[in-house]
Length: 341
Image (cartoon, rainbow, N blue to C red; front, side):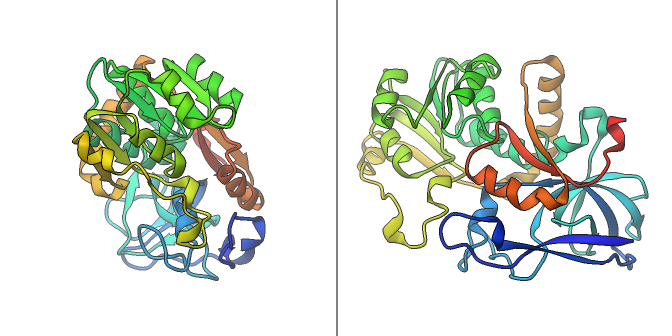
């Protein structure tokens, strides 16, 4: 079987562009003991991947030049020599941007249950983005009824779920995003209490207007100027789960970073800042899937996926995601999804 791979060939200097990727056609390999051959169907585009494109890496080891781009993937098992995984099973795991991945024996895979919804949910609302939002808002944010919650990048894969979990918990939820269409989506579809376009309002003025009673929980996806403005408007005992810093990912040196000026407010307001990643919370995964699937089935939580078709379009799909063109989770579909027929 012929395999097509998207290779990471150039470290970006500033904003990402399609020329950091290239393609390679190769043959698939038969799995050995403990390995699983997966026909990939959905490839994930995630902001954290930009950080791992740097020489120093972000949050874990940097991506290797010349390799297929590592990513979370949903696919179908076509051959298996690992106990518990059979031909035809739907799975997700840390695979790569390619049509087929032979998952090594020392790399985990997780089953995807089509009964819970589209199999793409395995790398979206019932996968990493959803678990990040779930742990961030409930475990680290400890959101309570009648509190004010502010979520940045709130129309994206993680922020849209985090904000809805705050709403479901009884909090007043405010979100920010970079277009009027995203603002409308947050208010009309996600049912946020308030939302604003950060490109149209100075961030401090926007927060003063939409959060007049201060901020109890800030779910941070962007860092930079937005984080600094929030620090000046914290309530006593505020919690700040920090899961992303997308405004800083393109910086090539510390001199290009925004820098924090209102740090002393963390002390005076007895606030708690928690940096975390989804890997810190895999022990919550089964609980999370069960509860989130129930919320989706009941109609209490909605989710959007922004799907681009064709592996040849994966580079542009990633660049567009980093530029903020998507609403919801950006995915690339590279194979037929039998569950849709």
